[in-house]
Length: 176
Image (tube, rainbow, N blue to C red; front, side, top):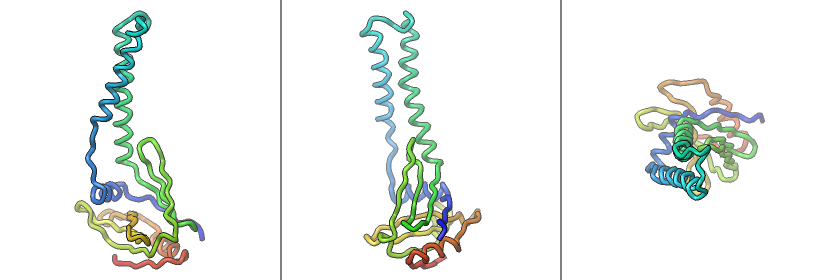
C-alpha cells in the first residue's frame, strides 16, 4: 500500500504540548551562556594585550556581537520551533513523524506492534475544535496526531488514513 501522509496543524501540536507537557520557559541559562561568551571574547584580547586592529572599542563590540548574536540565534530557533508543524506518514513500519526541534529535525517511528488500536475523535483544546487521530499504544500511552481544525477545515485524506491503518491490521474506532 502507498504511504499516506499529512501535515499536522501547528496549533494542534502547540495545544497538545501545553496541555500534556507543560513547562516553564527559563531563559536565564541562555542569557548566562551569552554573557559567558561575551566575557570570553572580552578576555581574549585582554590576555593577549592586543585588541583587534589595535582598537579596544572594536574588540568590545565584537565580543558583545558574538555573545548576544548567539542569544538572538537561540531565541530565533525557539520561535521557529513554536511555528513549525510536523509531518505524519503511515507506512508499513508504523507512524513515521518528522518534526522540528530547534535547529534539528527529529524523525520518529511508532511501530505497529506498539499500537493496540486507533481512534478518530473530536478534541477541544484551548477553545478550538480539532479532529484528531489517537493511537492507543500497548503500554497504555497515547500518541496524539492532529488531522484537522474543525472550525477551519482543510482537505485531508481521512478515508485513505483509515484504510491504511486497517490495511496494517489495526482497528480504527470513530467517535467524531
